Length: 192
Image 1: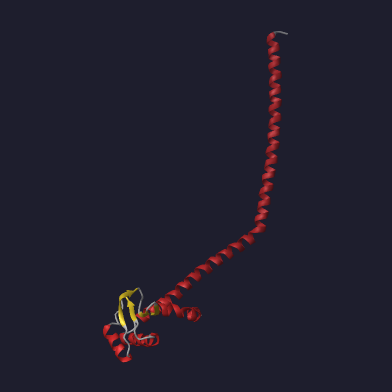
Image 2 (image 1 turned 90 degrees about the horizontal axis):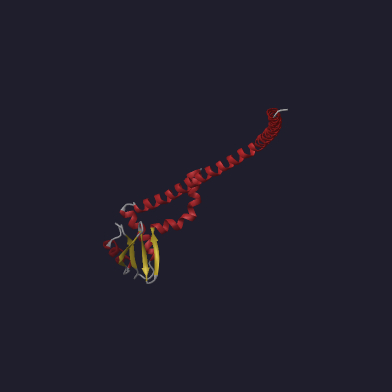
């Protein structure tokens, strides 16, 4: 056998071995791919079955959350309407005609005056309680009430100061004070 024949034989044997290794690798790859495909299908089927079982519960949870969100929005709207109702009451008190406004103030003043020497504080935008009205009140009730130079950030009404004691008869305080007592009734009237 010549050297060229030996080389050809070695080369042929090497090519045969390479082919055998490639075929073996292709078979392994095919087997691994089939196993992986089977596992993927099994996992997919498991998730599909699991989703099918859990879908009603997921929908139920979504409906519950949506219901809670809607209830929160409705509650916010109701609270806003209730607040607007009480703000409207403040506007009504502030907008009373002068004679009704001052009549109400006089009624409150008669109940609030203790010594007759208190100092009267009114709101920054007070347009009804003035010096002439206070002089008339003092004359008819034998009091010596006087105006304070200070104006308060109140929507209407007054505050009587006797030393360190303030008697707050502002509209803001009156509406705020009565709100807890009548809020349930306001809710019934607004939402039934």
